[in-house]
Amino acid sequence: MDPIEIPEYKYFITSLETWLSKKGNEQQRLADAFGLHKSTISKYIRNMRKKIIPYEIQVKIAHLIGYSYFDFLMAGRSIVNGTEPPERYNFHGARNPAKMAKFCESVILIEKHAEEIYHEIFDRVDLAAKTISLVSQKNLT
Image (tube, rainbow, N blue to C red):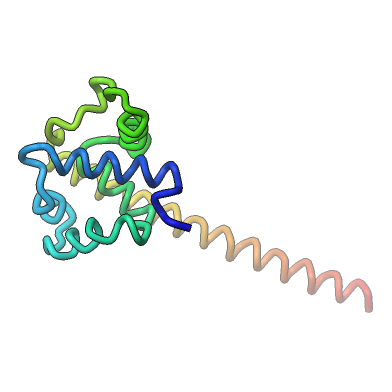
């Protein structure tokens, strides 16, 4: 399946291409915000119609540009449907990039903490299942 056939991904690409087409919104700004080399960002953008940019990267790009992921997709949908995006979806420059970078770092920390909690819960459930299994085996003998 061609990635562009997935509606949500098509909306993401449309928003990103629209943002990049505005004066002052260069790949270098994304690279700086991500702390990556411009060639890495260029590679993602060059290949985004052939290979899906990972969801986590899509979310980070939307946040770094200054939008929630949902708003970024809704702007793309408006453009794909041939309507002007509502004012809150305009791409006339990112909101405060430093503030968005800090926000993105916070989101990453929260996601990391949530993953740690998930693993801790999984380990406890696994231990409980093993304990129940041992108790059941002892009761059968």
